[in-house]
Length: 489
Image (cartoon, rainbow, N blue to C red; front, side, top):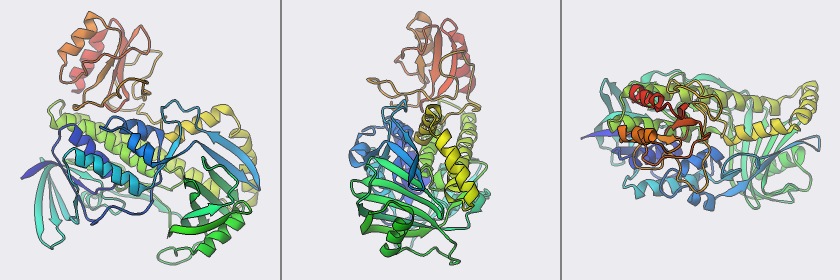
């Protein structure tokens, strides 16, 4: 039997893609070689924009918020002094904070949500080979009992991580580099830490970076760069070594105990140039890997899935032809490029060893990061509410004033999120008139029957299912919207 969509990989990205497709009534199969979900904290944070997008799903973001811990500021420190404190309170979102939640909990909640949609992850099923056809893809799947299955699908989602079989099969170059340093990771309990639990901290020490992320009261993740060990795999730190790092680079009087997870790793910054290869798509770590600086890797991957799912659902459900899918790579590749560059800059800033450069960094950082507009821009970037698609091939005509094509539309309190229905329809924001009613009647399969209030009385906006503006027109020129829908869908 041919599935409409086969997803390889059931981490947060694969699960998100499967949920989005299933709620849009697209038949989906998802396989994962691991026998069990991760029990590690791994990726720790859900940012504001990801929480907004999760609100589109049945159950919304509430279960995640209930399981997580809110962090609403980041402090930068050097030489025992605070360089800057960046608060997220200015972020225009229902969720002006970082939600700290272990990846194990994120995966658990996503899988529960997928199960509620009557889709089950097939665990212990490894994809050992993939081939593409003009009209689909075939995969060889090895089950835990050793038998192999030949599976066919119309579309293939490669959510299979940094060592992606799908990426290797299509021949996508994973361009980038591995940093010449080792890093330690420690999820531990600590006491005597002088900064509130609701803040993350970045220490710019003369020896390198030391980063502290709260996970829950009394529990923290610590990250620090180390000199290259020369070993094939960076060594796992001991609790004693973690304490020595705290004593060297962190605040005095802080003690670590009861470690939960200790690990060593190296930072890779890599990305493919194309996210779509015919009937196959690359999402998440299969398409891009980043420095943990900024904590945006998992969120960027989940937003890949949100972006792809509504477009693929529109094609599968006969609402659009395949050309809408070409925008997935161009939109998400640009975002991935920016996230990669930002993470690299943050990593370089924190790990520079030249004392003159460090002094300049500290002085300039104190001046620049102290400016309110800079702090607001940095908060928007961290929380990913500034992500947009200004160069998207799906962008249509614009209207001076109001949100422009490709821009995010912030959620409105008391209203269902755009795109939260069971079909990937677009939403009209405008004043009720016979013309807007006629527009909705003309495109019943493409346009949400519920008209939203306009951003300006003299304007009309069309918003995509993922909450980004598609096009805009004057209030009395609904023909612009109609032509856009006819052209793109």
